[in-house]
Every structure is written in structure tokens, then in C-alpha cells.
Length: 102
Image 1 (tube, one colour):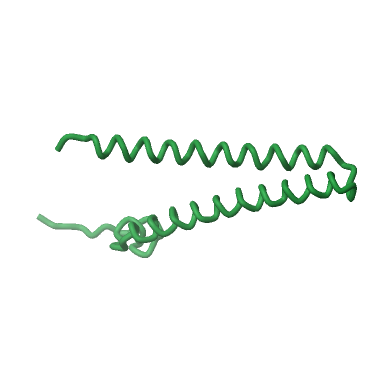
Image 2 (spheres, one colour; image 1 turned 135 degrees about the vertical axis):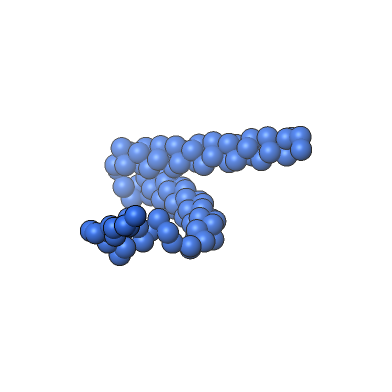
């Protein structure tokens, strides 16, 4: 019985090279989640600082654009609510894992 070789199989194709890679991706996932969380909290803080600065400028009479002040306040409020919901979901998941019976 003769065994014929398979022609046309390119072992350097991107599909095959990525499917057989032995890289450990857990380190990058953990680092990226921590970085994502830090960046998100920084953005929320920046939005709140911007909202405070615009509110103070409006109260001092430096600017008269109430729409910009209200939009900045709403952006900061929505970002804070979103961050609090994420925190609540993380705490719920943690509590559920801690209550699992082994």
C-alpha cells in the first residue's frame, strides 16, 4: 500500500501557525484587564474633573454656554453610573464564586 504525500499544505500559513502556537495567553489577559480597569477609572475621573471645571467657569461667569456644562455633567454622571454597575457585577460574581460548594 502506497502512501501519497499531501501537496499544497503550507505549514507557514497564518491559520496553522496560530493554531499550534504554545504561547501562554493568561498573562496578557490578566494584564489587559487590569490596564482596562485603570484606564476606565482614569477616564471617569477626567470626565468628573472636566464637569467640575466647566461648572465653576459657568458659576464665575467665564462662560455662558449652559449646554456644554450640562452635557459634561451628564457624561460624568453616566460614566460614574456605568462604573458603579460594573463594580456591582464584579462583586456579585465574586460572592457567587465564594458561595459555591466544592
